[in-house]
Image (cartoon, rainbow, N blue to C red; front, side):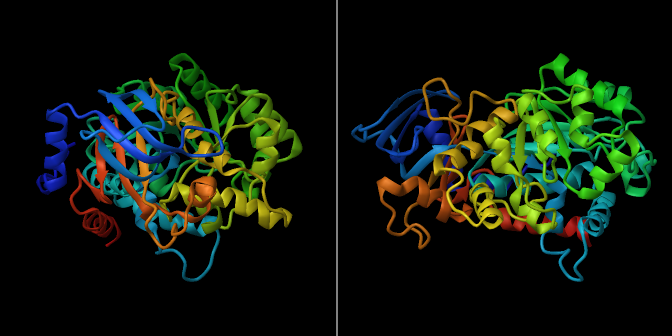
Length: 467
């Protein structure tokens, strides 16, 4: 694959960033910062040594050489579930109603058109959009592996490597969750665009994914697309590979009632119990959606300490339903958050939607504190993706953090005592002012420092795969 570079990215802010790096600038002064707990700290000095935070001091005076982070600074946010190419569908699938299954046909239409180069361009633009929204790490649930009709590329991982390169170009971290996808439905062969997803069998998947290599900004994980797409014996192979590699394992779970019905008819058990039986649940695992669960399913997921990744903006966009997030959390499951189809790219919106959806279900407020929801957006999301050293502002942690401006109409009147609540329940991606990943600013004063014109890049990339 030929990875293109954007010469226009070398703008004023990028030049300034390079100058800062050349003089060894490693200090950031935050007006406010969330260091954990239910309150923000004031006047926080962050010392950064290479890619890690070396010291954190609250109540500090602002040094003359420190970069001023104007607003409230939080750890970088993790987008734990993303399908990059779905971004091309934003706003294009709403006329005429329909269901998840009719939307899926539109998604297949985009999948048919993508090449490694066009996928790189689309993902690079999307990941830059994510950076502007305060996302410092993405979990890319990747199943578009091969060429048209399933023909292999000379490099069997050309599509996955395009995604890894795109994340690097956009300045964020990535966990490539390479998905096994073997069937077009329970017991049905792959057809049409689905042929691009398959590796023949689970051993073929394992052989290909084992050729992928991590990078400083990239980790390799595994994914079981769903029990619809991966038969039981193959589930066991993918789970075993994940354990051997000590890699994250993600899977779609019970997003649709029809999935549950097909699994019960074929195997006599729910998707969660089928995954448990083949050792796919556990502390390295994350179940995405987990929308339509039985009490027995909740027990299996919590008993195995499987993380639950909620994607509320996609779940409401596709009319999936509202998952039992509070029951799962109360039972002991950690929660992570994802943008999934990228109908919306705003992890703060995903965080508050978890609480607001539960309010709609129960007609009661206050199921999570703001700090709990922010934890799902940061530390727990990073842990789900295999980056436990990220997602917190502490000495030794990765130097990934986000500053949210307090001067918009959304946050006017914010005060320290309730700043976390105002941040989680009122702020949006548009309020992100600065983003630092691995100790370097990739967003400065609301502008991306590596991709000069993110809207133009998105426009060109989307048009290239939808015309």
